[in-house]
Length: 435
Ligand code: GDP
Ligand code: IMO
Ligand code: MG
Image (cartoon, rainbow, N blue to C red; front, side):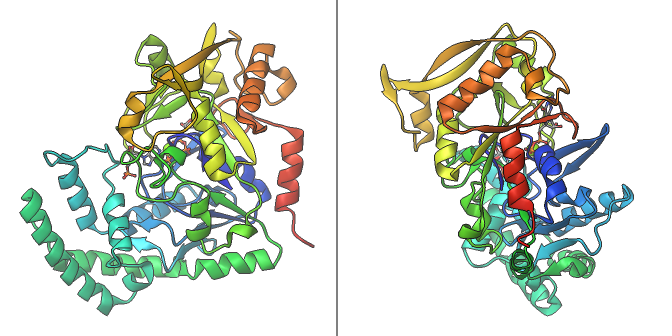
């Protein structure tokens, strides 16, 4: 399983793409089209939002699990773009009949709420993700299976639009949405989505029974997790490893390895605490060299330094078996690299991660300056080719987190990757058929 160990955008798309060569199925378990997973193959760029990155490998099946919130219009748009790029989606892309559906009123409510006076502004991706998960937990959501049941869809839209229009008007003075128009659009979308829909929990468990291997593709990251992240500046789903079981219907004890992804530094998009944020020129350099602009919204990402206390926390809440470090090349020109090795509050060492956003304001980061390597690592594929200072940097991360590094990414392209032998062996074991 691949999970983001920071605030998302760690390079999950690229790493899933690299690893998916060895797996039969790739499954998304949480989030929606708030995710933007970039894969670059021989210079050709794909940004996947809902569809798992396994779709780029013809031998791989891709599953959108029940934990995902699916915007039918966004899904069909992505499918059309993939078809246009010559990729096969028919017969190898599956959508859970239990996934929740995002409808236009979710976006309406989110937009109005985000801009309402007195509300905490989260800086969401404005995709309707939060309100769709609210309806799921409130037991008034529409699932994909219900979308395909046109009588039920009609009744659901009529009732929900009536209710949401009243709420949005009363609270935010929003313009009402038209239920008939919405039904016509979503009934048409339902017809196009139907061929992709099945009981994906059954599909995944049958695949496991047949000795096939599954790679779980996390979206967002640990610090955006609804429970474990920097609440309320989080997304509305379980982005951590626990979400993979509930979000797909594969039991936790069937999941062998959890691979945590971290950049060699840190970024976050949107509001909320970010202890190691660097707003100086050095931070701007990270943004420039790392091309740190949101894959979904194009917003400039906030940048800062590697935060080891947060990585240790990510190890704990996800049960990380391995770390993968991406974007090492972005640090190539630095003479010194600050790394946060601990937090202090009122001069006292702090090992706990604050539960409240306000708790982060009191944190003082303790930095250690690591020597830079001032030479290009772009495209290196062997650990031994890395300059000594880069190897020392990685060894320091391993020592401080207690998690071994399995891969190091040295550029955005599929081939720009260093794979450590022991990790390759373990992936081989995890992905080879049981016999
Ligand atoms: P995801 O959401 O975790 O899949 O990550 P994103 O795709 O949103 O953001 C990661 C960005 O970094 C993308 O533009 C990738 O092409 C790029 N990227 C991934 N790995 C590397 C790397 O090792 N070096 C560099 N320079 N860019 C990388
Ligand atoms: P990937 O999968 C980075 C952030 C948003 C916002 C907060 C809540 O590409 O790593 P939401 O629309 O989910 O309600 O927004 O979460 N966010 C992400 N940041 N990468 C992502 O996904 C994100 N998905 C949501 O910027 O701060
Ligand atoms: Mg992303």
